[in-house]
Image 1 (cartoon, rainbow, N blue to C red):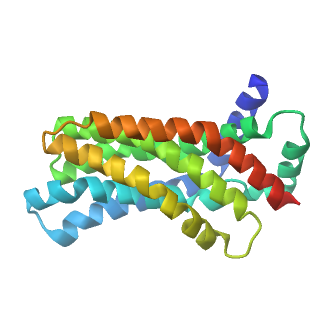
Image 2: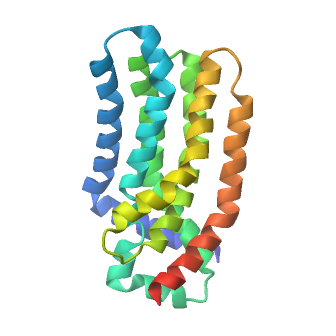
Length: 222
């Protein structure tokens, strides 16, 4: 079972490396969106520190959505998805492997880039640390929740727009607690409660999302 899990992660990472343009599109979008706000608002540091958590988190949320439509599309087009559904391995486990690979090529680069972009907003070292922690807890949840929408809209015309409409309301708690953690840290209130809630959302998504995504894939494949 674990062999199939590792195999699908390695396979999706290899396919992602062959399509580096998709990876760089997500990262470039994130960098551009976060960098445009200081240029548009001006050099007032108090204002930049105030809006930084929301800007970074909204940019990360939108950037993570860019690649959602492609999460199962290639497998659906080349017939690999049908083989996955027919394999003796638990589909939820294979889905979890695909989502983990998706996060490694889309979510993890955002986490790595966020502290550098946060310097434009004059965030303190402590706030940058909380920003990294919040993104490490929140971006996997975005991938897990987004996988459900990607599976439900698989093969539909205009699937990208439908995915956005389906998953954006579900992303709101992650956005609130993620941005709230950085804001609470910057104001000296402490981010422990927000980070705990982000962790709870991640655990819930880990337990439920693969099962829901597997069921959605079976429906879409019929």
